[in-house]
Length: 314
Image (cartoon, rainbow, N blue to C red):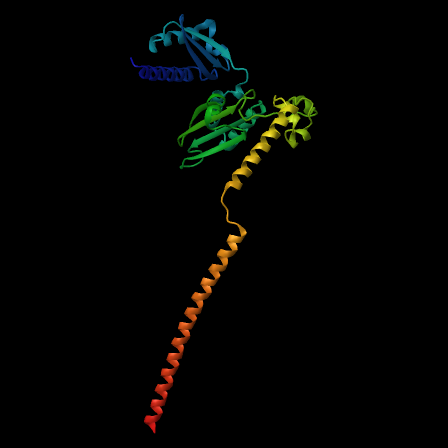
């Protein structure tokens, strides 16, 4: 048989056993069960509000339960252990059954819900939620919620910390589902924190080797202190002298290379500039003279045309 199929069959068997206990031990205040398979057989731990009713007179009821588990559910050598619930108001399964019975006896749903959740919080719970769904007051079904304190709805805390229980109230108008969620007082939530009063801060601050907060905020020390802090040794005087000599040699080499570069002298630069200016002036004079001649020719032609027109008019 595949592992997946085995998991499904184990879960189905566990659910059927739980339903059997809920029907058989409802009056005893059934609060859930734990099943564990051991080499000696199957260990079953029952949680009940009234263990005496589960065991029965002379152990009659417990023997009947053991026989049923062997014959109907096929368990090998079941060993049933009954434990009493310390605080029934903190057991979600017992609270859901109580609330369902109260609704069946005619309690108004709002009064029953508030009374039940108040008892849960008085028992020391960190948070609780009650959800009633169905035909609560009329022909149309609806959902009513009652919240107190702090409750988790998803994530790992909702699966491992929150205690959930479901009950049913069979009414004339229809069935009402009762769902109860409780966070017990000893639960440790991942977002819990504590506030300590009258406590010296130095007891919880890491050792800073005698340095004050102001020194730490200013930054790392400079010079020899910084080198000593990081584990480095400060350079000796001889080493500093060698570094200065090296720097001077590098500067001298750089200046020699710069002097070897061919750069024009001031005299050559002046001659070249004069020649360029003279050539530019000559070009400008020639262009200006040509433009002046063109303008004179145009003016003379216009004057001659004007004279001819006057002669024709005469």
